Length: 262
Image (cartoon, rainbow, N blue to C red):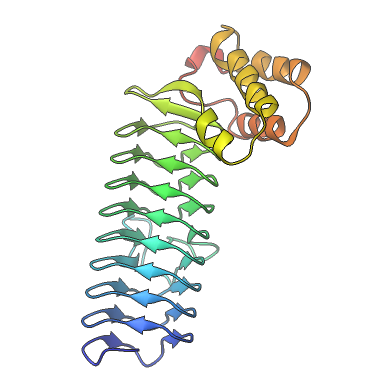
């Protein structure tokens, strides 16, 4: 169903059972998969590639021009996966380079008035609260929740299964399976309630807690904390997630003093 009051460029590629409501705008060089719904006054902009079963609420701008002076008008992309819900007045910028662009995985919920900057990566099954702002080149891991009003600064990574409490300003990297809160942001414990609800065993939750006691409570360097994790915590995919994340960001994680990162 395409409303006669909507604008759909003739070159846009639409899948089966796509609904385009009145006053929606679908630009040239756009691909929209099966069973998507584009509600009134939403804009799907040039360079957007959208999968199936997505619902885009009124006032959204998907694939907006990147807000970065390095972008000089090149053809770039915004990739949206499947089964996402993007609520009112969300803005998602496409990338500033054509290699990968901005990517939203599958089964994400992005709540009203949030902004996702250029070349950001949301890896799937993520909840973005109302009014969240992600700067460019951020990465949010699977099954993470960013509560309302969170700000994530450019080039920061947030690991999987993280809960960021409302209003936090994230200026560094947040390792997996934790809760962070306050400003300046601090480690607030392991995300045990969510992990337990989704089938993690008590042994794995306890292993995560042991890892983070070494990192946040041992008063040693990050380098030594990681060595202690490997020596003290049984090998598992969870331990590997934590250790690999910390190593990949060179030990620069939230709430660890700079002089302990070497």
